[in-house]
Length: 457
Image (cartoon, rainbow, N blue to C red):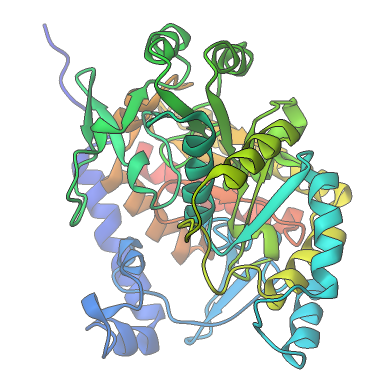
């Protein structure tokens, strides 16, 4: 006999809707100014918000922020939130870290952009190899741009047309990576707006942790580059199985395929990211979001061997625009903020604090899940922690997609906000910053435990 469904994540849909409705009303009562300002849509903006992702928050209407500092956000109604979202990693080291704020103020009086290097650029050029390991670097404005440019380099030097991604991956808004698996077949991801190509013609996709599938996909030697996160993070978190990264590197080398590691989220692992911590030895490396302390900036680096190959390509190609680069990339404000971040904020000492507090958060959340008998689990990569409303651990993108429970997660999210805690809206991600204290961790654990008890009662 087929077992009767208990709803989502072991919680009845009726209880989820009751919690969502109750918490929505609490949210509204606490934010009369935000409701007046944003509930009907903000005048002048398409869909009522400056960037459409702002409508993805599961709150009844957007929170209008007055200020953010350290590890907290205050809205225009005076509500203070312990922030564990940090702009979905953009402010992973806290809001306006003092060294970055000082650097921005200093540079603001010297000019914001002039398409020429500054003295801070000299320092950053020395810091990037020291922190991340690869010797040659370029600056862009977003990780999306950096990934696009790095993939162009990969195609240029290999002469191969295709790339390979893992199902469930996240690499910003790079068109070629918007491919997934459906019943074992590569398809354009659902919901794409205005895409005019069949992306599967230029992209292969296999499951994360599937080395036999990867080997088969690379066998034709038509893949220029495998682009991957070290841990799948923009879905329910999927950790690499033992030996996966060693196998990935061996197979790419065997087939003459380049390897690009995108650390935009997994920079939470430790100093130098997952790549440096686990000695992944990629050909290309991309980091966006937090590298300049919240100022829009990204970096992409390459190995010495790849730099030589690309220099040979550049020498031989016909003159003309390469299609790589944007006017505001590598501006002096970026360099000032990056230098401050790399020298004074992204430090071993700060990472040690983040690791300790994230481990405390992981233990507390896992204990609450166990105490309430919920079929959930907790995953962590360094300072990045997620609770997942399904059993685990997960092995690939298909399992991660099946574990996603949007209605349940939305109810939990609003309930956490009402208890003074903000987490990421797109998934159940929580970051611990250098400014995050033990009391904030404990408040989050207490709030989560209270909500879990209500759902499990």
